[in-house]
Amino acid sequence: MAWYVKKDIAETKHVRKTLWVKCKRCSSHIYESEWKKNLNVCPNCNFHGSITSKERIELTFDKNTFKELYANISPLDSLKFVDLKGSYKDKYEANKKKSGINEAVVTGHGKINGIKAVAAVMDFRFLGGSLGSGTGEKILRAANYALKNKIPYIIFSESGGARMQEGVLSLMQMAKTCSGIALLNKSNIPFISVLANPTTGGVTASYAMMGDINIAEPYAVIGFAGRRVIEQTIGEKLPDDFQTAEYLLDHGFVDTIVNRKDMKDYLSNILSYYNR
Figure (cartoon, rainbow, N blue to C red):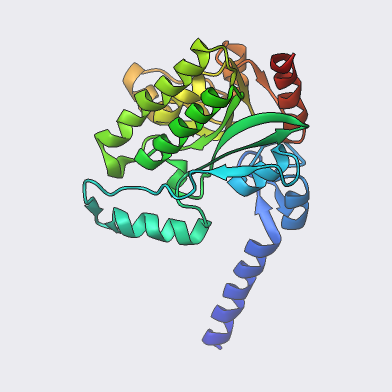
């Protein structure tokens, strides 16, 4: 009977995985169909879960208006990085196949309630939405496109930070992307930063916090170093809500918190002031 019991357990786990989603904040089990219908937002505690770049674009831009830019840009394994789990090249090729995109960010332009905007949408499925040389190149080129056409620029961040497999080349993207955004500021072209869960590391330390308006989704984790590292460094216990969107709002690091279902209208309202 051992084979039967093992098979039964395996099937039960598969059913649980496919039928239910467990909220990372309140641990509630929600039917996957309900979770998807609610835009990957917990109906019990309003925690905003991860969504793909494709889903984000469909939620934000008017139907059939988004045109992708620089889709052919891919990671570059300049260091020929290899660790115990294999080569960096094998990892990003596997991520390309799994996610259907070539880098951790999708860039393009379209209309939000009829208003033109350029966007860079990060996708956590691709190596944790990490910032690599290809990611930085796409974000910079999108900023240059916005500058040339005098169109507002929006970045949706969802990232674990700089991509360790590229070493200092990844860290260079922090300055590179910020320089592109600084040119927008100099030309009075709006840059809006939307911070989703999580936005951490080198992304937080660069373009994610440079918005003319910084918007966060509810309960998003936003910070640079990890909680444990900070506690060990300063020798103190941090508040329970430390590095949450709500904590950052209270301390002036973000301007507002907006629910996902309201984000499109909120963005178009902001953009309408620029158009006037």
